[in-house]
Amino acid sequence: MFAAFKASGIEPLLADAGVTGLERQRYATFQQLWHQFGLLAFISGMLTDFLDGWAARAFKAESRFGVWLDPIADKLLVGAALIALALALKTWLIYIPAALILARDVFMTWLRTRPEAAGIVAPSRLAKWKTAAEMMAITGLMLPLALWPMPEAPAGGDGLHWSTLVTGALVLGLWVAAALSLLTGAQYVKAIKGGQR
Image (cartoon, rainbow, N blue to C red; front, side):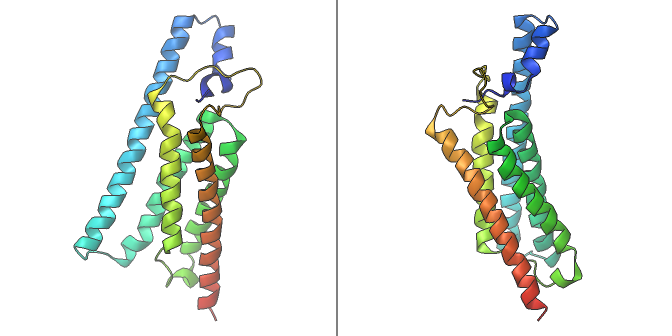
C-alpha cells in the first residue's frame, strides 16, 4: 500500500553506498518499528485525551483553563502525527491538507491568546467532528506503515499507492478534516468579531 521507503530516497542512497540487501532489510525493519511506536503513541494520546475529558465531565471537574488547554493538546498531538506522516509518505496528497491543518492550528493557538478571545473558549460541535475526522484519518494512514513492510515504489510513482479504496477514503478523510479546520477557524474568527460589537 505504502512505498515511502524507496520514495524517500533513502533506499537508493543505501544502494549507492554499497549497503547489502540484508542491511537494507534491517533498516526497513527499524523504520517499521519507529512507525509502530508512533502509532502506539498516537493512540495512547487519543485515549488519554478522551478519558480526561470524560472524567472531567463525569465528576464535574471542568475548569475554564482545562477547556482552553484541551484543544491545544489536541493540536500538538495531531500536528506531530501529520508531520511524521508527511515525512514518511512524501506525497502532495498529504502535504497540502497537513499544511492547511497545521497553519490553521498555529493561527488558532495564537488567536486564543488574544484578549478579545478571552470569552470564547469552548469548541463547537463542528470542531469536535473536525478533530474526530483528523484522528480517524491519521490512525488509518499510520496503521499500514506500522503493520506491513513498505514495498518499493514503481518508477516515477508517488510515495502513496492507490492499491485499495480504503487508502483513498482515508486520504479523502484527511482533506475533509482540513476543510473542516478552515471552516471552524472562520467560525471562531466570526464569533470573536461578533463579540466585539
